[in-house]
Length: 331
Image 1 (cartoon, rainbow, N blue to C red):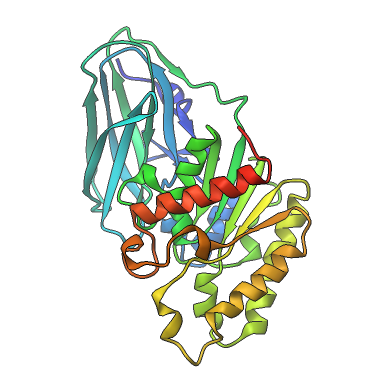
Image 2: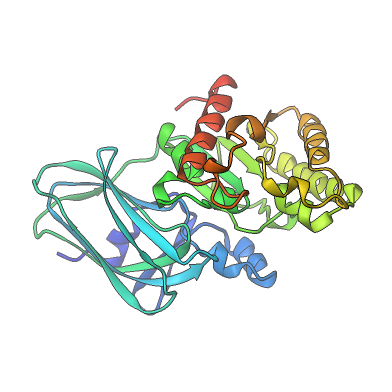
């Protein structure tokens, strides 16, 4: 039995909506039309179309799950996974290289037919669109009711986007969403920075809490220009807090990185902690989270001295969850 496009669309969560591409493929989206247009204009359009954090979430009592997919976006990473969970347990991952072109196929069969909650997490290193979603004839497929779930909006750069977790479902943004059983919209974009233009004041997604994790790419953009760094970050935070004045926001300071000592002509990396700590502290609804304290400053937690590996992403998630719970945020 093949689901109709409408039935397939109803299974997506952690997204702003969908669009049809290639005539029959359904692409879930992380951004509004205005945000998408801006990212395309500044050269980040393909990264914005990565399906980071997006999942299919439904109850199913059959065995077969299969679908075709095509690629719609990419990062600099040349691999991806699609992770399948049943009742909260990861059972299978499709682990392969992303070519960025062509049509391919996902298929999995449960050993036993019984009702179970199925979650299929789509890649963060590329974007995909789905078609031909097939299940057992006569089986019941019911979208998970998320109407009472909290909503999280996670903003940031490549680390929020997911780099460099080995499995798409082990990115900190996804792990935080899983912990709170929340609808978690991941709007991280690899390589991005404080840019007030990406805040859409008319975004239909209305979060109950927000995390913000920019700053490390801004160091490379502004180098020794502390005033320029402060101006960009302040404009972003002022607009974000105007847009969400009553929503708790967690401002996460940048993680440790090995390049801190490689640029003596830039402002000291510690200076950005002073700048962001001051800017975050100026807003009553912002809680400061010290990134250096939540992921150990050790190379084994990173792939390249900048991006946390799976172990680092999991540590990051634990730190963010603790900070949110300490501030009173619950399921």
